[in-house]
Image 1: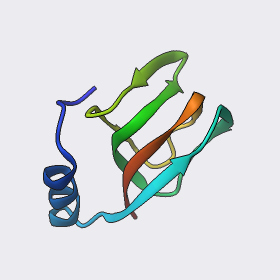
Image 2 (image 1 turned 60 degrees about the vertical axis):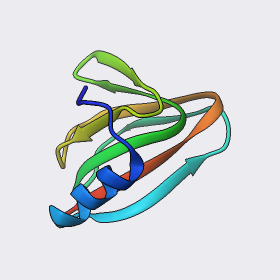
Image 3 (image 1 turned 90 degrees about the vertical axis):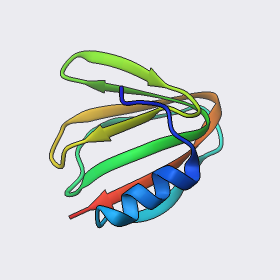
Length: 92
């Protein structure tokens, strides 16, 4: 886990580093089976929580917490009943 950060600061950092920025909203409980992305990810949880499972290790991220995933990293994503809103940076 990286350090806690506010949205404005995090978004400015993403843009400075060349990331495309978008907001991802998951409204309810959901599990995304194991997959990977063809881009690097840096993200900030704005609302709710997401649990990522990578290499057999699970970690839950809550509002104000950030995480990153390298392109090609196999992982699962899990959301509880409240879903989540996440500010996502993607970089090819």
